[in-house]
Image 1 (cartoon, rainbow, N blue to C red):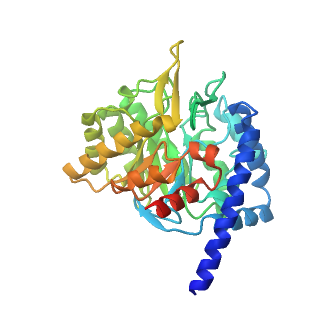
Image 2 (spheres, rainbow, N blue to C red):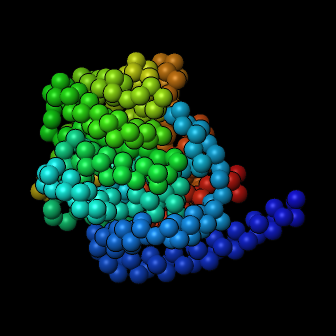
Length: 379
């Protein structure tokens, strides 16, 4: 058995060596395009791959070779791997209204490119973010690369809307991955707690009515690319309204998670942790991108290496606060995790499960497995 194990590990190492070399070449070609064009090219590939059954089998085989199952539990979810592709990659294009989005579903077109192929290739994925109504998002330059392995985006919560997303996914229930999550966000600009409560209830009702049962649902209270002040949109009254709607609208056996922003004062994180205890939130995803503002006053989000320090700071604060307040909530790290040493640092604070976004660009579809492998071999 040891011989077989060693042989498989050698073959896996050889496969990953060739993969690393291949991805460096691919990244060189991708960098010849601007970030938005590169993202669109990837979306086009995923849309084509979604339709092929043999393609799916090939993608799953590659994933098994590159990153064999490595079960982990966090937030009430049994995951096949400890890494989750963060929301933002699998959510679809923007629409001006719900009629347009639903007509795409009726026409039988692929509303959410990557819904099938990306989970087959990388493992657990969080779909979204989805808002109650479709959003076209920002129409100017929305994605760019930053120095180092970092990204900037001003997408503006572009998405198909939760009703259209639920309708499309319900048509493919039998082909959805075994382990997947969905990320729901409040409508930007809506600040009235009662309105937030009503819209989140409606969003969750569409999921339930479509008989969709994701492995978890994340309420995203931090959307830095919509020009909203992150401190104000994460107020106690607003977060309470969103969590109350989620608790009332979600089946009890679907774990509830919440995604927070970086850079908040410890007292604000304490409030959020206390609400997690009150509403039985199982996990806090820390964090979303960091809000920046350009010379024209437009906000955008920074991710990758430039986010790492702020994300780690949030993880540390939340870990201490959950112990102080005795709240049984798991912390799921997200932001700036690009190599093994990043993960090793997070494990000192009890992090078991983590999300990644920029790593998919800079290290490819097997980034999660590579980072876990590096952390293991370096320990």
